[in-house]
Image 1 (cartoon, rainbow, N blue to C red):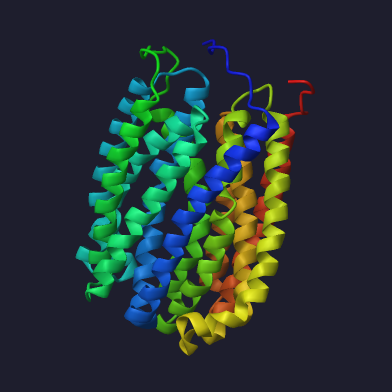
Image 2: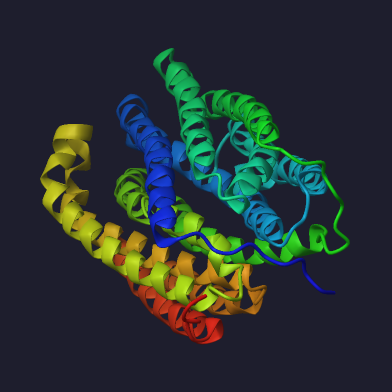
Length: 406
């Protein structure tokens, strides 16, 4: 079915400005998230912090529909679909996420050896994240990066501040995560009002607007990516002893930093990836910038490693020498994310098969070969690097040559 004429891509200066604004919002959200780990690691201790980190990882995996929905909504906004119909798609996805979250509570609690109440507090955030993602996708697809920056920052702070307050009052991991869910719901409602204020014309329905099937196809791409960012942490909880799992969880914070910090690159260039006239240039630009930023972040992790005992206590000193490796894993995963985003933008989601193969290899090696923190991170880095390289090459080939003068 023919698509509406897509808007002309923004100028390079506009892309840089958008990237800067989104980076500020994302950094605010990520800084808040990272700061959550500091009091949590101190107040809960290695064993309790290991449980807290594993519940956060499980929450991230169940948030996959939200990530997928945002990419689909942004892509379809570029293609001309209206906000009302895309919101309806978001409501349906949120309902499915709620059913899935409730059904998985006992399974996740058993697998991670956590309380049912604590697991519920973690997973209940999923449908709220889906609602928020629909609004973020509308902002992203319209190129309203200043507003998107505000929403990203608000979502991060609103999720973390209540959790820290609960932890300070002596609450456990589940209560803290449940408080964060409440904050996420509030921001989703505010984001809808922000998007509504930008609606200048009456909505029109588009016959090409996708259904839940499109979100599911994007979800399997996002699931492969998120599983690769979380599998090692979940397996460490199952395979290593409680203290070693806590050490690995803290090291994985560096992985998250290196993975999430460059996310503005993909957010801003994604609408151009969805435009056939600019996809080749956008994919190449995104991957080049991600590789460069990754190198800087790995070097920064190596330089900052001596601060680990000072920030979180001597109990975590053993992870100090491995911080650069954790950051390298995150940098490779960021490149992988860039390649997979281009697959969603061009609706070539079969590219995720490479990531699924990498995930299977990682699971086998971690459950049969790795038995220490050092071995776990070595496997994680090797698999992430090879998978990212293969996906990046295939994504560039699929995008085709850059169109000059577009």
